[in-house]
Image 1 (cartoon, rainbow, N blue to C red):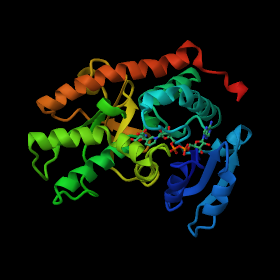
Image 2 (cartoon, rainbow, N blue to C red):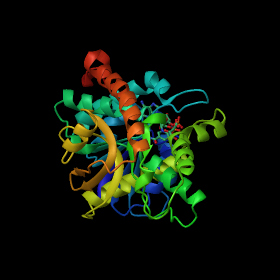
Image 3 (cartoon, rainbow, N blue to C red):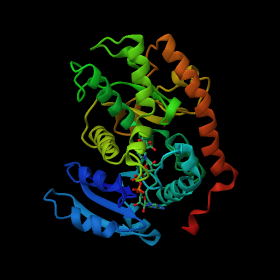
Image 4 (cartoon, helix red, strand yellow):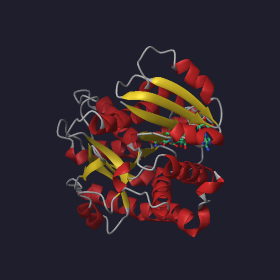
Amino acid sequence: MVKVVVCGAAGGIGQPLSLLLKQSSLISHLALYDIVNAAGVASDLSHINTASKVTGHVGKDSLAEALTGAHTVVIPAGVPRKPGMTRDDLFKVNASIVRDLAQACAQYCPTAFILVISNPVNSTVPIVCEVLKKAKVFDPRRVFGVTTLDVVRSSTFVHQIKPQFEPHSNRITVVGGHSGATIVPVLSQVKQVRFSDEEIKTLTHRIQYGGDEVVKAKDGAGSATLSMAYAGARFTNSLLEASVGGKRGLVESTYVHLIGNPGAEWNVQATGGLQYFAQDVELGPQGVAQVKALPDLSVEEKKLVEIAIGELKGNIAKGVSFITEGGATPAAKL
Ligand SMILES: NC(=O)C1=CN([C@@H]2O[C@H](COP(=O)(O)OP(=O)(O)OC[C@H]3O[C@@H](n4cnc5c(N)ncnc54)[C@H](O)[C@@H]3O)[C@@H](O)[C@H]2O)C=CC1
Ligand SMILES: O=C([O-])CC(=O)C(=O)O
């Protein structure tokens, strides 16, 4: 039974995610942090009759209290997209939000698992890792970019055209990153159903741009929140089951720092030395137990991975240089 902190808990994702996490029997303390409204959300959730305690923490002065003793910190803090924006357009606001939260984690819960939802994930994960490296508390096994929504969408969209594909228990591997062309679903490895070339093309495009579908439908009112909360809770629960519940063999696709992670050498080679990549990861007591080798790819998927690698290089460099070239503020300023 552990303490889990949600940073950005009063937001569109934060609220339903906290609701789902309130149902976990592995969480003894759910701490909700936000710069607004976290006390109200915590009060509301605290009336639910599950055993965990819920506390609310509002504003930077309460960050130490929120984070101290955390086993896992989930970060959906930051602004979402509006129609016409890319995830990269969010960098100028969200990079410093994520940096400051990572600095606080380094200070108050340096051994916690950190799950990054805030976009652009391809760059915010490198920001978190660079902050932790600077603070000399970095363990690559403990930082995750949450790309589970791409996996959830993949099974849903496949089921919609192939009803015999059971969407809940059949997991589809998604590699690369979390934005447009960097999202590469490995549909060639789906064993339960067969696709035509045209179906693969249509499905791949829909999975890559699933986020845009929601942004467009919400028409200025934000991006995916409920499906993201579901996906975020699924990933958090898998990690807790593996790290606290002692479950073995749990695999999720997630965007991780490859270098230094068990089993990642193959991926480093396959991606031409990329530092971060989303891939199937077996979870264990320390977080990443093993990064799986890239699955067999079709000729088309190989081309898509090449495109993803090209884009990821820029996204990663942008996140890294934000910290190494002066983006970080001293933790003392928090
Ligand atoms: N990884 C993924 O698959 C997905 C990521 N996202 C991303 O998640 C993020 C959040 O999205 P929504 O919940 O829809 O946005 P939202 O605007 O509804 O909520 C964000 C929350 O973060 C809070 N916040 C802002 N600055 C903060 C700080 N310094 N510390 C703590 N909290 C802070 C806000 O007060 C707000 O409550 C966005 O960046 C969005 O792009 C959204 C969907 C999927
Ligand atoms: O599209 C967005 O901006 C939010 C997101 O990451 C997603 O829904 O996959």
